[in-house]
Image 1: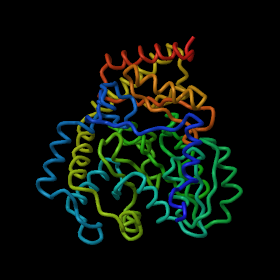
Image 2 (image 1 turned 90 degrees about the vertical axis):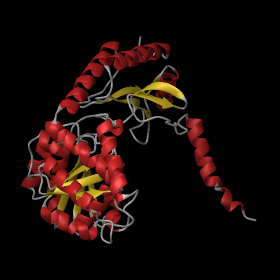
Image 3 (image 1 turned 120 degrees about the vertical axis):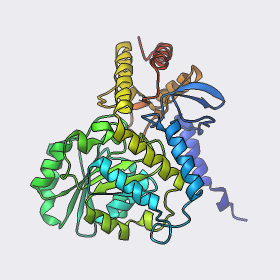
Image 4 (image 1 turned 30 degrees about the horizontal axis):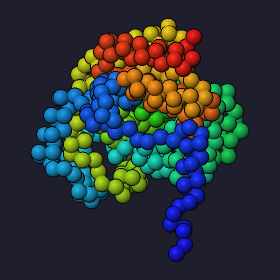
Length: 396
């Protein structure tokens, strides 16, 4: 029998990962995702979660989720265009649109699905997509699914973006400029006002993926568009429901026209079962909580500033972050992986980020501070960072 089924070519690639020191095994969580967790059987401080506001284990949100299961069951049973469009899906979209201060919101089953579904639905052959070079993988993949041509501009470089527009705009019917709102590896914020000005100057549409801005920036976490007061000037505002909102899903907020078209052409929604009642209940409650109070976003930012200041005083390189995302840049990939492993051994879980997620030579651990952390937990985390940093000669 042929040995083709042994997948030898993949075994070779896996060995290469091991040789490079970047092979990993999945950590196993056996508790709720919170400020402290049980990971691989050990209690540790969690600095790797996107659960910015602590909503993933919030009692009020869990209660709302359970209530929806009791009333509507475990699943919706179909795609939205058949019989999977429950009244609670419609209610969620109304609440999201109100929160985002847009005409409509259209919900997907994940943030990745949102980019994969929306970009290909609103662009076609004869159009051009212009994307920041550091945009998220889901934007890259979503753009590849489109029949439109693609161009890249240098990260947050407005001269580079305008050069592309000067050269290419005249050759295309529609042009869509896409950027992350907050860049997840460095924590910097897109120059959205400048991007919108250029888009309007050259008659282009704008598309902002606000996965790490939703629940973080803007009034009560309304996002980057709200942060810069650009309502009505950004055509497609994407948000995730799996990070600050603490559950699962994604959405795009915008015009009634956008909503009507996506109902007919957003493939992940047309061909995949809709969000579960439990998820819809949790998300709706979370958005209502954000509209009621700024306490969660206020605590998040207070904790983030506190933690960044302590790490900087210790001498760590925390890059140019403008948000609660706090990278600690180590450099060499294998050394970043080792730093992460040693932090875990000492009681802090911070995931290492290496190439190809970030450029070669910029390996790092990415710290995600949340509203759920106490100052005592952050103090203890900094003490462990200092200890391991000195042991590995990262700090002098």
